[in-house]
Image 1 (cartoon, rainbow, N blue to C red):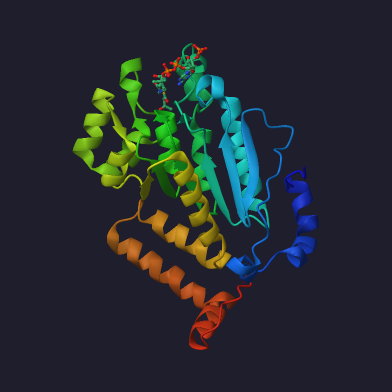
Image 2: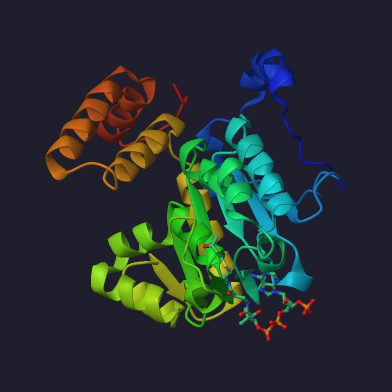
Length: 303
Ligand code: CAA
């Protein structure tokens, strides 16, 4: 089995030119010319996650700590961040899919690891801060495919992703209150924006869970699926669709939508317009609009 290429920062720049020449243009992702399904073994260094490239341009990270229902220990998060960064820097990966098992996306932060922490240890080591690098360092779109438990930090991790898909029976929730604590990786903030203050307050203060079907109905999830197989197929299809567009436009689209979560409407619209203006400087805007007028398929250059 081939091994997924991992790019370390010091080797990346020296290999960029070679990769540029090797980089498949997006037009090669058309249905007729898709290469057969490929799967790669995870780099040997990963213990708690697996990585693969299940479709052209799609990098998949699977949380893999089954005995603890994918509880998010610090070593797991470190591996996750390494894999995310590696996919983000990869010249061939264009969209990232983050998933767990059918039984658990992730059952939260590792309670056994957290239990003995003191305030000073948590504060001085900025415990849990590194989880948020997913939202700041990664510029390519991340789709979360959630099945089974997505509790506490697991729910928060899913909420950090750009698109959330789930099964109807997925089990979301912020049960930290039952442990004598509160969400610590953005749950109270992102849930409030997604479902409104009153519902978020109820969830955080009662620890009550909500189903994947409710997540969909409340706008937390973009789509929900009847089975695990449908979830994975639907997620991969969307990832592949996004991977087939101009990388420049996709990254800009992610940036402007995410800005809406931080800015008021006036500043947000202004920001969007500036980024929109800047895309007139890209080759792909010219290519996309010319192809439309000529009724041809756009062949993106990612420039
Ligand atoms: N941390 C550490 N270990 C966990 C875990 C977690 N969050 N969730 C499950 N596990 C472990 C269990 O201890 C158990 O291990 P052992 O076999 O060694 O005893 C194993 O995973 C299987 O779990 P269960 O036997 O409990 O499985 P179940 O099917 O009966 O129940 C569950 C599943 C409802 C998800 C239950 O495991 C559970 O309630 N887990 C905790 C959920 C939770 O409270 N999450 C929030 C954590 S705090 C947090 O995330 C803070 C934050 O904001 C960042």
